[in-house]
Length: 212
Image 1 (cartoon, rainbow, N blue to C red):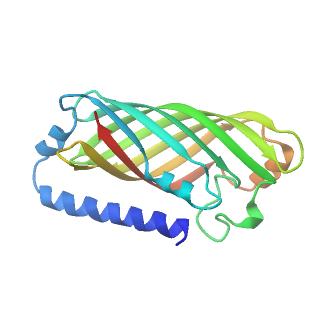
Image 2: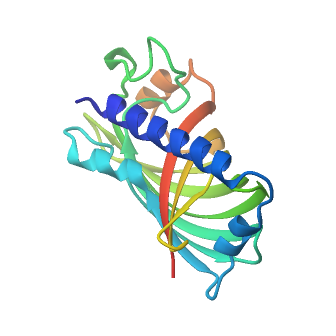
């Protein structure tokens, strides 16, 4: 089973759950609001995409977010993320996506801590925004390593599903990503990077969270 098939299957399953739960709720969203901002306003969440770390040639991706529910509709987050990548992030879906021909002559390792804001719009439907500065180390196949900075912005639209008496939740989402700052990139990496934009549309996400 390929990583991409696994991602798509999990994401499709989560979207189907969202549709079924929204239909069951019917009119009104009081139950959904009660699921948030309960006795304790703290939440911890991570990405289910970390299962890819069990596959060969994984992105070595790890993420943890800690959130504080201001009220039933507004949540603030601080999150830490690390991963590595060997292709330009702006390559769109299609023939060139993850193509060997578009690989860097090496890889990039990124470490970041950022802030996020989540706003619930209707029932479990939400929009959120995240801004994360990443310290990046460039690891060429030949030559010394280098360091740089990336500023990474994301806008998400997703849906929250609650389980186990609202203790556990699942959040499938899609995001649009934009990185206006990318410094310190070696010339050999820059040559591979230059044909592609500094944005990416409709990246799937699947987070799982726990209310403490």
